Structures are given as structure tokens and as C-alpha cells.
Length: 465
Image 1: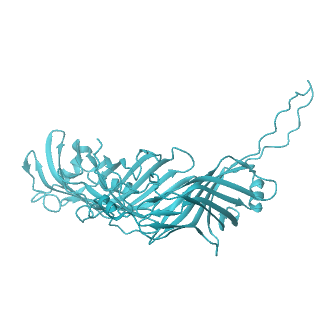
Image 2: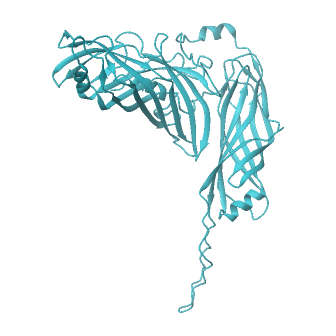
Image 3: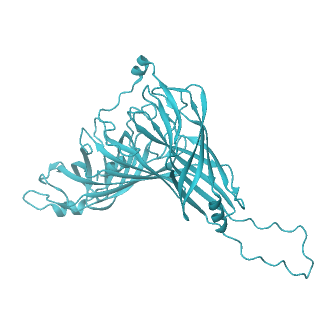
């Protein structure tokens, strides 16, 4: 029944990327760093050198964003790797490069820099090869009058290969009756590609640049500070996660009762969801995968607001009941976003388990004595999915901008229903079963620590029908 909102809340937390405005910084200066990486190729661990170049502002202003520009990531494939690739039938290579960069002030935020080679490059018959990937960097909001440092972290290469081109046909045709040229054997088939993960080699210097942060104009900054909900972003952050919050609302059908419940109170705000956003990233098979976790919050409890809804039992008898949904475990969220080419399609899957209770049941206006413990025999599992394009502006569903999420809920059989008579068969027969469609709507997300980078305060979305 009402369990849909829980997962909708969870699904909001697993996307990739936030749209950025132009940063307000001073004149730029160029930075360049060359360091060694230990990389895991199919043939084993290989060491390669990478050069990272970007333009940074000389100074930045607190509560404003730093946007590194002119990003170029150059990776030197060693000769042994080139020889192994040629032996496997590869003739050309192109690369999409993803570099994790740690931005540190009082705390550390992991950002992603991405680049791509302009075209496929021929593998040399001997020696190494430089893969030059121009790209872009994610912006960083600085929040204190303190120097922020940028340091290189993990590196991932999505390598895609091409086979040797066939020989160009001769401009003259063979004479009639003459034999065809002898075949030189079947053409080589190159491997489709490989994803290579790398970590900085021991003792490598990783600092790319340091930027001095100046204080913002105090009075105007204080006046511009948005009012954020009291419990927004109250969640434990792990890894490289960011604490964010947003509102979720929507509908959940009860298939057998020919109706849907609106999962928010008639007056007041819907449920808030707190999310540890993207605490871990993985680049795999050309997709950027982000993992997050979420928790419901309604007046300090991990639950949805209680709602009252009316349905039609047996198609004609009005039944009104109060519904309560409680989150039993954190919401696990997995987001898969295409990273190689626009429109960067994204699919978010969120899963959780909830407890459902009903109370205050009226049948055709007459109270029905169901007792205080009427409930399903077990918890309910729920999965919601959101899909969109990670463009600017985004389309469909993305985590920062919200949107619709859908799923189906299976309602278990009921137990402990009835006072003086067993009403379990009545509730099980008229409510329980699969195929209860859930349509949730998530609003834009807010990060109290980075209000200018996100949408603060979080807006209350209108439920999509």
C-alpha cells in the first residue's frame, strides 16, 4: 500500500552529477602534475605515468564555487602494454578517462574529472603511446576562509579497440581468367575493450593545486542564507558521500480495492528523506555506478506520515482506513549512468523493506472492530526505478533534480485482525496480493553544507498522477 514512498525516497539518492553555474573566482593560473599509477590490466599490474593539467583561480570566495577549467589528462601506455594489445589483434585505441580528485579543506570531497580522446589512435609497432584526453571537472563549493587543495586519487581508463583495416582494393582489376590474389588468412579480431583501474603509485606526489579562499561579504551572505528544514541531511556520511535531503510524495494503488492512496497528509509537508549521496563510485563497462543510502524522516521518526484513504471493496462498498508505513532498514540505492556519450542515460534502482499497519477502519461509514494489531504477516519488499538522461537540463528522473519513480508492491496476507471474530480472511482476500502499482514523485535535493551547489531549501513536489 503506502510502502512506495519509502523506495521513492531511496531512489532519489543514487544519481550522478549536479548542474553548475559559472564560478565566481579571480584570474586563472595553470597547474600541471605528473605522477605514477599502478594499473590492473588483464595481463597483470602495469605501471604507467599520467599528466594532469588544469587551470585554477588564483583565489576563491567562501560559499562560491571553484570550477577547474582546461582539463587535460594524458596517460602514457607503456610499450609492454602496447605489444600485448597488438598481439591480441588491436590496431587502434580510444579512451574515456575518469579521474577522482580529492578537494580538501576541513573535510574532503571526492569529485570526478572526465576526459576523452578526440579520435582513435593507431597502436605503434614499438614504443609507448600517449593518450591525450581533454575533458571537464566537477565544480567544488568552498565554505571557509581556508586554503583548498586538489589531489589526484583513483584513475579509470575505459579503453576501446579497433581491428586492423583491410587493405585498400587495387585500382586495376586482374586480367580475365587470372587467379585471384592469395588470401593471407582470416582478419584479426580486436578485443572490444577493457576497463582498467589504477591507484597512485607509492610515494607519488598527488597534489595538483592549492587555492586560497577569501571570506565572503558577511552581512549579505547571512541575509541570503536559505531556510532549511530542521532535520535535513541528518544521516551518517561514509566514504565520499554528501548529506542531502528532499521531499517525496505520490500514490500507491491497492489493486483489489480499485483505488490509490495519496501518501502525504492533507495538511502539512510530506515525508523528508535524508541521503548519504554517492558514497562510492565505480566505472565499469563504460558506465559510472554510484552507491548511496537513505533514511525516511517524519517528525524525527523513520516513517511516512500517517494517511487516511477511502477505497471500494468488492467494487462498490466504501472502505476508509488509516495507513502507517515504517522503514525497517536503510534504503539501498544503485545508480548506473552512461559515461561514454550523451545523453548519458541513467537508471536508478532503490530497495528497502517496510512494515505496513492499518487502523480505524470504517465500512460504509460504520466502524469495523479490527483490533490494535491488525497487520500483514510479514514485512513488504519494495523496489522503485527511475530513468532519465543526465544532461543539462536533465530529462526524466535524475537524483539532483528529482522526477517520477515507479514500481510494484506485493502486500502479504494479514494476521491478528478482528475483535471477537477472525477478520484475517476478509483483509487477506480483499487487500493482499501482487501488482499494486506505485508512482512516486521526488523533489529537488538540498545539501545544507553546499546550499549554492544544490537546491535549497528543498521544494515540495506535486504528486504526478
